[in-house]
Image (cartoon, rainbow, N blue to C red):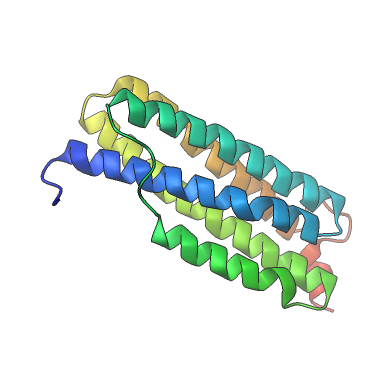
Length: 168
């Protein structure tokens, strides 16, 4: 059925983000265990926990509008997950693999940032202040995940820095 209203588009975009968060939760534990760096492991584990919280928020918002959160697959996240799976085993050097995993997690976070910013704007336009607040929380959390992962990539959390080791 074609979407004819902003409200319909809004619900579909929420369902897309719900699917994206569900899919991310399938890869985060595998990414976390693939690294031998405890800081990265903890960071990736936190990303997974945050994803679960955002998924629950999305479910509540979607159901609050009388819709079901399931039944939609986010194809963009499926592609990001496929690339992340490739990064899990294709790099022999640990530092290079960790850098590739950081890139994968950044892509997951950036998808969320773009999506949450959009649906938050839709919620505001539709006068859905409570939804907008919850979506703003999701946006902030996705941004914080991105910043944590980027900080590790730049070496701020590790004494040697992943990128520094990977350049050798």
